Amino acid sequence: MICFNPNFLFFGVLLVAGIGYIVYKPFPNDAAEPWKQTFVSSLVRMITLMSKIGATVGVSSKINITRFMVSAQKYLYQGNPNVKVWREEFDGVTVRISKPVTLDQSKLTPAIIYIHGGGWVVLDTDSYAHLTDTISLESEVVVVSIEYRLAPEHLYPVPLDDCVKASKFFLKNARQYGVDGNRIGIAGDSAGGNLAMSVALKLSEEAGSPKLAAQGLIYPVLQGINFLLPSYIQHSNGPAFITGDTMAEYFLSYMIGDWKYQSHFLTNNHTSPAVKQSEYARYVSHELLPDQFQAILEDDYGDNYGDEDVSKKLERYLLDSNFAPLMATDIALGKLPPTCLVTANFDVLRDDGFLLETRLKRIGREVTHQYYPGYEHGFLMHLVMYDGSLPAVQKFCKCMVNYMQS
Ligand SMILES: *[C@@H]1O[C@H](CO)[C@@H](O)[C@H](O)[C@H]1NC(C)=O
Ligand SMILES: *[C@@H]1O[C@H](CO)[C@@H](O)[C@H](O)[C@H]1NC(C)=O
Image 1 (cartoon, protein in one colour):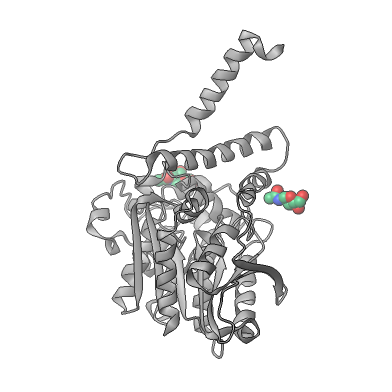
Image 2 (spheres, rainbow, N blue to C red):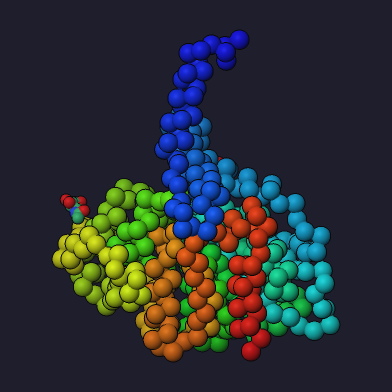
């Protein structure tokens, strides 16, 4: 009985304790539900660690192991009898459609196009089924969830192009689905929020293209040139699972599929002095943030440094508003539909959302910001999946439906 050998037991306990020590980063007491939040984030960190170990011993690539493990969350949800679900191809792009069975079929209804998160590299529409079905039920609308192709196999702009194609197809053929083409909103979380806003920007720029009625951005990724915002400084090392390192890795996966510049991001060393002194830098300046976050500011390296070679390779992505929507001019932002914005405090991306709010308000665009100081990146999905807690998602749906009525 090898497992009762005291030596094995000793090393076993040591191993588990060691892994626990690495992945365990407790949420502070002022968080909403510290124990649960610590558990969920530690679980994700555990998956990251296991993917690294798995890749080292040659099981598969790190990304593919992570994909396999995180998509296991789809087995936690067995579907909902009140939602009819089917798949279709919209102009060559697969979509998963949810339609509440109680939806009034006698008149055209609004709809939400949903783009899932996962850093452009992991997760899929099935892993998001619980959330997208819930949004469809709570908003009483059709939800079209896009199965866009993922990076790094498909680099920018492929994932975005898939989303644009599927969205345009739906806007043009809405009637076929009992949907009013003038009342379609787009929404997404994290990297999906990035894609949703990029689609909205693209459609608003194209003459003759049908227009979206609302955009819902849930803790979105909106820019990649300023990794020294207060939210990055505060949360780059946890306790939420998404760190500065993770974001650098995701950005590089989406841009070039090569991670050798990852360490440059954390000090903003990936942008040249010219970029740091440009108009673009003003779009993401900490001066646009609320006072309470500006007070956190530290580590100010100035604006006269940065690796020119790295910057040259990455600028054409990072300064492109279709890649990083906060790089859009005020004129471009002015053409966007009304915005429902959700942000969380324990999130390096928190300030991306606050920057967008300020910029939209300054130009008089409508924005409803639902800020959750006690929660972490990904919380909307965590609440729905692990707790069956609906108030936050209901509040978001209400905002979307409100904008889609008018
Ligand atoms: C993941 O696995 C698929 C199928 O084996 C392969 O085509 C793809 O290149 C892998 N991706 C990565 C990032 O390793
Ligand atoms: C920026 O990168 C260069 C070379 O890659 C390095 O020598 C320098 O120390 C870095 N600066 C900061 C602030 O990280």
